[in-house]
Length: 111
Image 1 (spheres, helix red, strand yellow):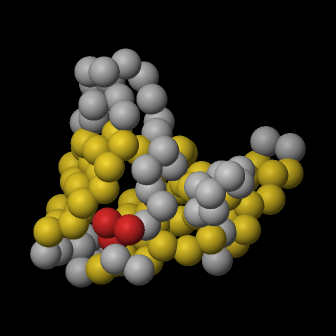
Image 2 (cartoon, helix red, strand yellow):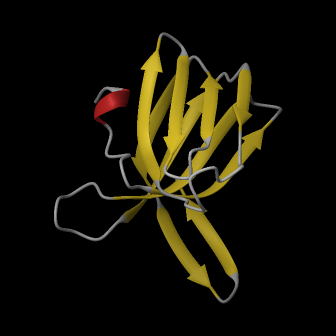
């Protein structure tokens, strides 16, 4: 599936994690992968990341929903419904469902 056709529109962005040692960036999402279904937990993982930038100004008002996502070469741009942007330069990406188990206050992600 190409980056532009991933079910990212209206997906809810939770946590962003960076692993400096392995040059990985992953986004913890709740994505609407099936029409008329509830959002499901997904991970959007970027490999061999050489640039990562974001804004969190909430120019259009607070929102953790994704508006649009585009890719040009090895550059990925995610536009948030808040007006903010996430820019990632990486060798590639993976989009996959995750197992999420909430135990009290701890959130455990499985691969």
